[in-house]
Image (cartoon, rainbow, N blue to C red; front, side):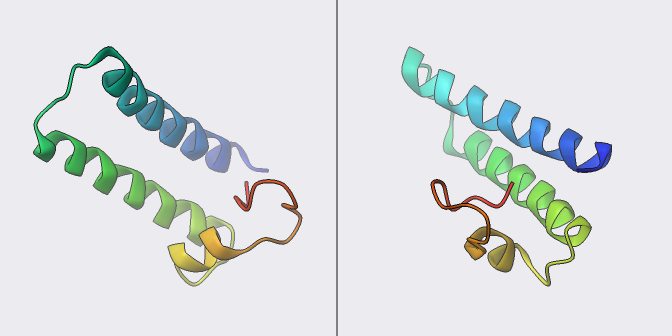
Amino acid sequence: MTRQKKEIIKKIDRIQTGIEMDELMGCRLPPAVYEAREQEIYGLLEQLARLQHYTNVEDLLHDTRGCENSGIPW
């Protein structure tokens, strides 16, 4: 896996972890904040899909090759 792909995955994980921590601590932010974070994640997924030669994010997310346990192709 290239360094660029690893960095994108790290960014996605950081954003998702932040959202989960907000929910666990009860610090619900306005919905617009979460929408912005979700849009950022989707943008990163688009980059990752391009780097992995998928035509779009949906193809990336629905590819189960080599992922018997998780369904996530990275």
